[in-house]
Length: 69
Image 1 (spheres, rainbow, N blue to C red):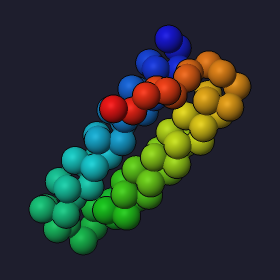
Image 2: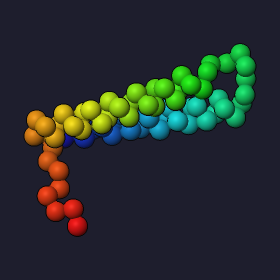
Image 3: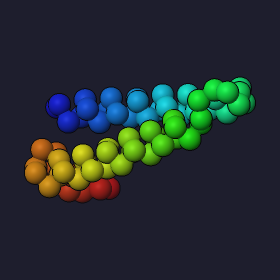
Image 4: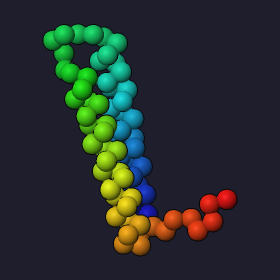
């Protein structure tokens, strides 16, 4: 259960960074923070999510669906 909460929280954090980058892109302030900072956080968060899911499947904390249909 903890792994699912952690992945859910990371997904929310990833979407937050996506919208933060969008707001910076729309403002187009040259003195403000860079949009790539938030896009980089989003990419790092998605890599952490994939690694966490792979680790959880490998250790048996979560099990994949045996019948995908």
